[in-house]
Length: 291
Image 1 (cartoon, rainbow, N blue to C red):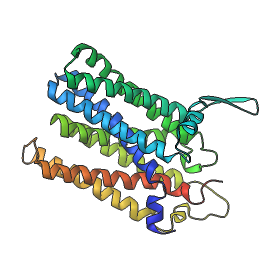
Image 2: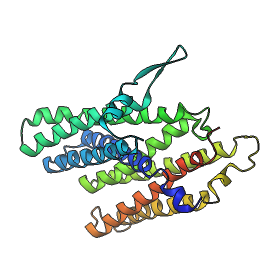
Image 3: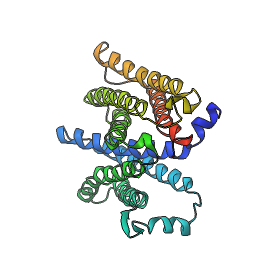
Image 4: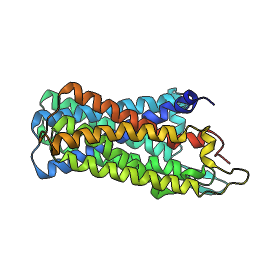
């Protein structure tokens, strides 16, 4: 398998999960910032537009990932919220994820449209309170999709690690989007802490995977054809540089604002780094880890 195949074998899942988690992280960060101070109306509208765009694009890519992305096939998937297997009932985490994020997207679209038209500001505010809740539940269902396969996809067997990785990924991506929208100094604390949390989870993930004992496999990481460490280093570099630039700008230059060009490069670098980390998440299971 080539490096290209390792990276792009699950590109739809990579983009879907990252964009959905970025929307959730943005909603959570907005909720925290709005608790401490009043958000100006124009920035609140930009938050709604950005959240809705991220989640809408995520769901579009997610639907395209289905093996047969037509309305009938989609309805068939969504109908399996609760199903029977040999007399045992199970939750269908995939339809729960899609339905929850879909409802959240509809709420986001309605709130964005009403905000754009300047209608019923009080109702728009109330609708916006549902966005972090809905997106958070959607990501929780997303976590359960992977951890429910833990007996066969062994590297997803630790639910704490999977949830922590998705949570810190959400906060890290969301805090950068929030900084772009609100230009609030408090974002530096969320960016820094979420990045530290993400690095700790990656160490925990490597420790967990490295300790797995599978008959006939001496080195699990070799199943990625020698690319695992290269992808990880790429991710660390492309996420660390933006964090260091922002910290230097805040702590040394004492500036909150950045030029549009520089910040666009920073956002692109962050997203590239997070794509690398998410490729790591899928790469092992796309080789020989399904037993």
